[in-house]
Every structure is written in structure tokens, then in C-alpha cells.
Amino acid sequence: MSAQRFTPDIIARAELLISRIQGVCSAKISADETGEITEVHVVAMAAKSPKLVARDVETCLKAELGIHVDHRKIGVVLYDRKEPESPPARAGAEDAPADDIIELPVDEFPSRFVFQSVNLFISHDGVKAEVELVIDGTETFGSARSDNSPNSQRELVAEATVKAVSEFLDEKQKLCLVEVLEIPLGDEDAVVVRVDLIRDRERKSLAGCSIVSGDINQTVVFATLDAINRVMGKLRSKGSIEYKIE
Image 1 (spheres, rainbow, N blue to C red):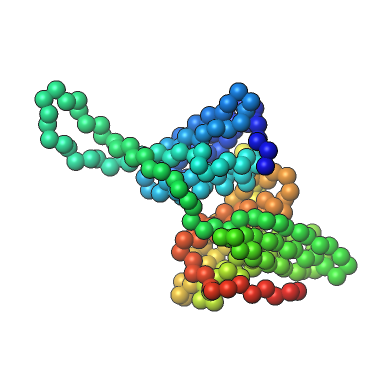
Image 2: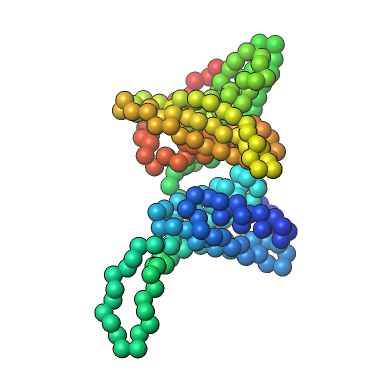
């Protein structure tokens, strides 16, 4: 992949986008004279691990602005507001700071679903959506079909995404699409998706959001995955994936 080069305006937008990620306090992006990103510096609260923060940064930049940043270029500093224990007094020593700064390396990310493709087929028989995802190098596929109603296309894409994820999960867990909305968000539009996770007789509601940019169907997939990927570390996968051809 050829190097991506960005204007100062795009880099400023990327910094603002990162700073809006939950738990992130501030962000600074360094670029060389050609506009290629060399480093991404992030300060975040210690409630999240540095791996999770860096994963969120990488995914957010890719999904919202089309910026691909190697995770090795993302440095995360964790900011802990806990009052540290007072060290023994030393003659001439300065007062200990009230906050701790913890810097940890980011090596690798937990498993999560990554977008591969989305296709929408419209015919006299109705509408069909197909979504392909990848997780840990394994492809998973989902499809959904409905009558020829334009209003149902976003729901079909989200449903196909949920089915692609469900192919990876064991039978004791179930994902149910609840609603897909396109709403104004500031000076832009956003897609918001709610998915419910049913497991062990309990229901947990998940919500995901993605700014509309480019293909609306991709945006729906990104918003759906934004909801599901938040709990990927807690989901149980099955041994193998079997596909049903529709």
C-alpha cells in the first residue's frame, strides 16, 4: 500500500476525532514534510488498557476518515487520577504530583471483526444484502433478504452484518438487530445501530455509531460492528464456521 499523505486540515480533523473517543483526554498527530503520519500520541484515562485505546484509535481513523495507521505508530499514555500513596519525605524533594502517568507499550489487539465487503442486490424478487467480515484471518459471511422496499435496505445490511458475526458465535449466544437510524449529528449525518445480545437468559443492549461518509452501506456495517466489537472479548466463539448458501 502506498503511503498516505494528508493536509494539516485533515490531520487536525483526525486529532479532534480521536479526542472524542470515550476515555481519551487528548491526541497529537506528528507528520513529516510530505504529510505522511509518523506518530500518533494519545493520552487516555486508565479505565481502558492501552491496547484497547490504540485499537479504537486505529479503527476510528480508518472508518471515519479513511486513514490507515499502523498500530506500531500509536503511542498511548494512561492517565490515572487516583491519589498515590505518599512516599517517604526526603530532604529537598519536591511535592509528589497528585496524578500518576503510566505509559505502557501497545503490542497487539484483541480479536475483532473487520469489514471486507458489502453488496446489495435489487431485483423484481426483492432486495438482498451480503456482508463479508474477517476475524483472526477467518472469513465469515452473512446475508439477509426482504421485499423491494427502499426503506428496508439499511436494516438488511445491518441484519446481514449481524448474521455474519453470528456465524462465529456458539449457539448459547444470540444477536438481535433492534433498530437502524440515520440522524443529523452536528453538521454531518450519522448512522446509529442498536443490537441486543441475549445470553444466559439475560439481554444486553449494544449501540454503535458511524459518521456517514462515502458508501451508506459501508457506514451501516461500520456502525453495526462498532456496537458488537465493544463486547468481543466477552463473546464465546464456536470451533468452526459453517456457511449457509441462500
